[in-house]
Image (cartoon, rainbow, N blue to C red; front, side, top):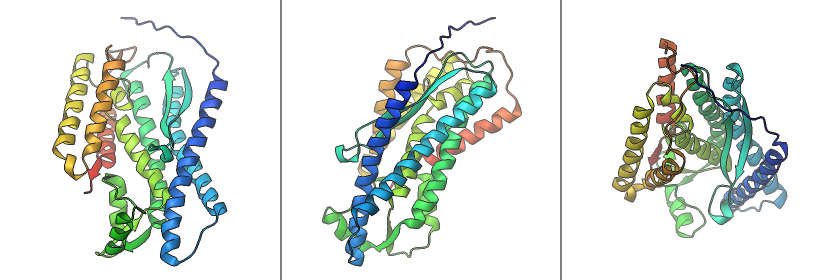
Length: 311
């Protein structure tokens, strides 16, 4: 069976630059908001005041590291796409309201495949390489973020929260929770997270979302490489149902993130998942033992990025 897909070459450099610039601004504003809050509390603890130049420096570093992590994710897709000769467009960085308006400054970034991957293995690698490189970059940033974070006594943390000068994080990605647990801070202490740690926090959450085996998400590509379009579609519905049930069951202890993701993925599936995932061009190509090893890596990434309720 021969499958033919239409391919049109487009020039979108201006659009990409415009989106990147807007995303840089919204992420920088978020970085400034986080840095301002962190250094205000830190300054209060050590009785000092941090200048605007310090906040601007950390905001810029925050933005660079955040964009680098997002870029690493997309570069993983690009490497795999070029290896198998799959034409792509992008990456497109997507701006969103900054933290001052209640969000995180970006919805991530995307690339678009202009033709079907030639084989099941190529579809698998294109879907997996992005989250893998994105996770590794987020892990590196998180290590430095945790090291820069300041231990504070629980009583002091409670005072800061009650005064509205700090917030309690209701959930934590597994990888970041492990890194925090590896830092010896004492049983009666917690960490005032540095903005660099928040970069890793967001990258892990975005990676978890992208790994969900639904539609054209990265996880959807990975799972479609091993399944028929009917089974792939069924798995998508099962995952959405599990997320929403988990969100309802754990709502009081920080599980709202599951309910939120379940709702967003439901909308995503209704809008973009109405048609079955096309799969690779050669639907009868073989899957090797190495490919199943990559599937294990995919499952491990999900586990490391899963948000754990903390309340």
